[in-house]
Structures are given as C-alpha cells and as structure tokens.
Length: 313
Ligand code: BDR
Ligand code: CA
Image 1 (tube, rainbow, N blue to C red):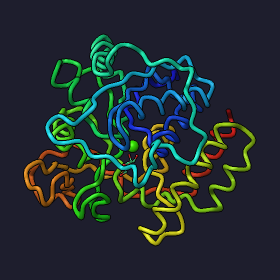
Image 2: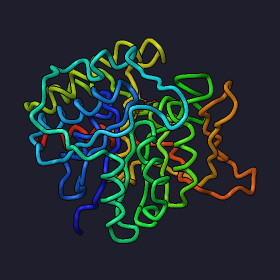
Image 3: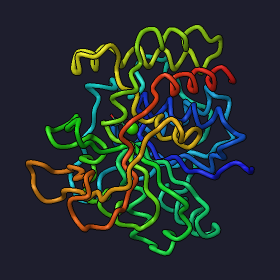
Image 4: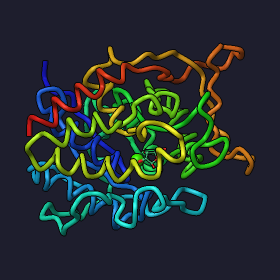
C-alpha cells in the first residue's frame, strides 16, 4: 500500500516534537507532505523554529515547514511555558536549524495542497490549537471534500480539563476554530485527555528510549524527562502523559486504541466552561455523531511502537 499522505499541524511543544519524530520514522506508512506550525504552547516564532529543529535532528531537511496563525480566530492567545519551558522544547539542546522556513503561509499551503488533492485523500493531524485548519476551511470550504480524515489531539470528558476545570489546552486555545473543524463533516478522530492520561512516560519507559543510540532518541528522552518534573506532581502519577504522539500512533496502529462514535460539541460562549468538549458518550441526544472519541489505549503497545520506531533513525 502507498504511504498515506498527511499534514501535521502543530505547536511544538515536547510532545508535538515526539509526534513529528514518530511520523518521520515511518515513511513506508506515512508521507509527511508538510508541517504547519501554529501559536500554542509557545509563540509562533518558536513553534515553527522547533518544528524545523526536529526535521534537522531526524535528518529530514527535505520536509517543508510553514508558519501559520500567530493568534486564535477570536480570543486572546494563551500559552504554556510553565509546562514546556521558555523554548517549548526544554530538555533537549536547542539550536538554530538548517531546515528552512518556507515563505508561503501555512494556511495558503493547506489551501493549495488540500485544494489540489483528490477527493478524500489527505489526512490532517493537528496536535495544537486548530486555528490554521479552521482558517483554511473558512477561506475555501471546498477543500473539505479532499480531506480523508482528521486525527487530532484535544478535549476531555471524564478526565476534566487540564487548563481550566472544563477545558483541555488545545481546545481552550481556540474554541471557535475547534467548532468549525468539528462541524466540517469529514471523519474526525479525537484523542483527548481520557486516553492520553493513560499513556504515561514512566522512568522505565524513558530509560528504554534513552538506551537507544541515536540523536532522535536522545532528544526524545531529554524532553520526556523535562516533562516529568511538572506533570507527575500535578497528576500524582508515575510519569507524565504523552499526548500528541497518540495521533500518529493511531494512524500506524489503530488496533492499539478503543473508539466510540459520538456527538461532540464545543462550548464557545460560557467563560466558565469555555472550550469544553461535550462528548455525548451514552448517546443521550439525537445530535449527529460527528466524531470518533478515543477512550482507551494499550499503553504498553504504544511505548513498544514508539521505542521500536525511534530505534530506526
Ligand atoms: C496538549 O496541550 C499541549 O500542552 C500539548 O502539546 C498537547 O497538544 C495537551 O493538553
Ligand atoms: Ca501540542
């Protein structure tokens, strides 16, 4: 089977960075058409730089990186340096990358690449706020029919929020953009905190990655160790959750995850619960089932996959 064409829209972020590595480790299954950066964990000038750093470290300077939205569609920008550090990728040695930044805006790249593709052919993998994807859909709704599937990280049901009591960071960062993406009508698979909080980077799992003798594994182990400090205290867990790579792992090994087709609506009005993902898990409404909500994972299988793929570099 030919590799599946994907575009990764991200805000690196240590866990976005690991998602990029996992995708770049798997060229037989995934063809990365481009990486589009968005402001999120840290400002855009850092997220686009960090995406290019990952291309350098992985030896994939051929992958094109584009800078997109500097702020959400409507709300003020939020960021998360208190988790990710000032660089967004604290824990690894950060440097000025050789991989160039493309001059084309990320939204124009999405419009051109998805717009010129065959119907239902491109898979989008957003791991940050959904501003770039929504802006492209607003600019040309016809691109929607060429999207094969959207597999994104965001939202929470049973876990509650990680940025407010109700909301997960990516959705809170741009709830209006999220609403547009969740209404687009294409297959949507949503990897929220209910599942990513089961994918814990315990010291044993990180050590197995640290024992791999290549630069990608070293950078990954460094970044995961940095994450440890803050998240294990917050969640009182044996390791920090590894959110964003779940999206790419799902593309490679969907059998590792359990999903349920549900209606999911996004809160865009109440300040108290802004960015909440209202997941109709028990089908208590007649609202259309617009998403596959991911609710369970084989975490050992996930880390086996990640460790095996990082060893390929
Ligand atoms: C999400 O927010 C960011 O901090 C992470 O990169 C991830 O995409 C988790 O809530
Ligand atoms: Ca992210």
